Amino acid sequence: QVQLVESGGGLVKPGGSLRLSCAASGFTFSDYYMSWIRQAPGKGLEWISYIDSSGTKIYNADSVKGRFTISRDNAKNSLYLQMDSLRDEDTAVYYCAREGGYCSGGRCYSEGYFDYWGQGILVTVSS
Amino acid sequence: QSVLTQPPSVSAAPGQTVTISCSGSSSNIGDSFVSWYQRLPGTAPKLLIYDNNKRPSGIPDRFSASKSGTSATLGITGLQTGDEADYYCGTWDNILTAYVFGGGTKVTVL
Image (spheres, each protein chain N blue to C red):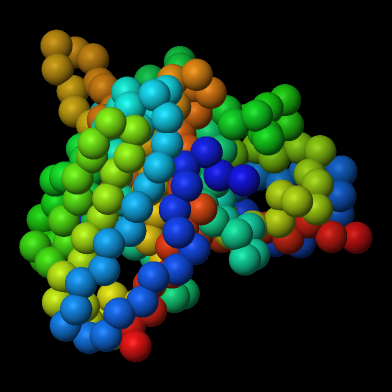
């Protein structure tokens, strides 16, 4: 079955860096777009970044542009989020999520929804 | 301030029906498919509805959804205590080039 397991969270000081990882299993990782989504304490869901199946197309939310970098290693079935210049407001539970999609004619496409989510990992930014 | 607007909370007795609205604009709901997610306390969000009104396998038909213009609606019939959760709508916004969620609606079973 599809499994997504995040790791790498923890406590970091403002201005610091952290790298999250998401290990995927139970599906052909290289066929799917992936995203990072977060939820700050007491707040709603916030999408922050997506990457296409080949790793060539990336979109980021304005709130993290220039600070967070999404990447993937299809050989290792892994998704990453490099977070730099962290701020207090980045404190949240971070989820990796698979985007529903399909492949056709040698290309893969996202259908614009998140069909599987990891259990989430807490990132706390505090001095 | 979320791009998509949902009521903060709705409530009803067991067995009754609740509806949750999600209001957007022509650059998001008006131009893309809507999906809905359920987040039970202490768990990761789960996909409830995709492509405006389709249910993934395993989601009971008590959950239904529709879209009209720049708004979408999720309905839950035969409300159960296990339905107490936060519900979020989401879609792609072509102007923001970002996926946007509603602020979430807390469903309480009285």
